[in-house]
Image (spheres, rainbow, N blue to C red):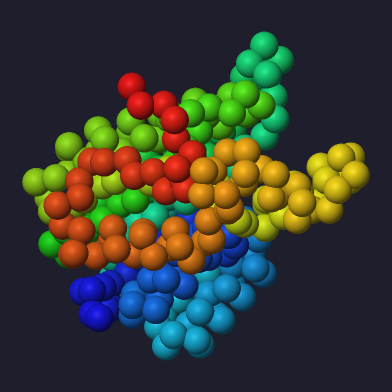
Length: 264
């Protein structure tokens, strides 16, 4: 089925691994050309090269830290030079850490504010003009279920992801008349290398295998009883990027296997 994305151009942050890589592959499968950035130059260039070869699309892999405005500007200028603009922006780069509000210094709050919020602001400002020239576009910001239902060990992640959801709604209202659709997606448990790394560390202290640890987490939080895959999440994001989702504007979509319990 042709969903109307062939020869579009998508920029994806954190595009070399995990969710970002899954979305990149999903879009490439539909004939979308890609501009990927990540902090690990070798990994992002390898990802771009492999996807380009597999799906026959053009792909650019660039080392860029999206917490640094100059590196965002440089990345966007390379994308403009190669593709002449962008149709899709996926703000995916992000991570969490363990802390308590009473102990976390300002520097840590600023770090995650830059990563989860200001990066999305800066990239949107940089790319919306080219979307307008091209007749419209799509922006999807990857938030988290924690933006609504916080985990107690990562308050900064919870707060900054909640701010990203509100930013998405405000931007959607501002750009809707430009035929630019903005939404956010809040995943729950999605199996990524970070989860496997965490499981490898924490399972040792519990005297269980990493797979047993992950199974316990899934059964504790997700009524479906398992982690989602990056491919499952990517399929949903590809749909949101397509003209078939033309009435989807300014919403936050949960993909969490039934985890969300907060309803008000």
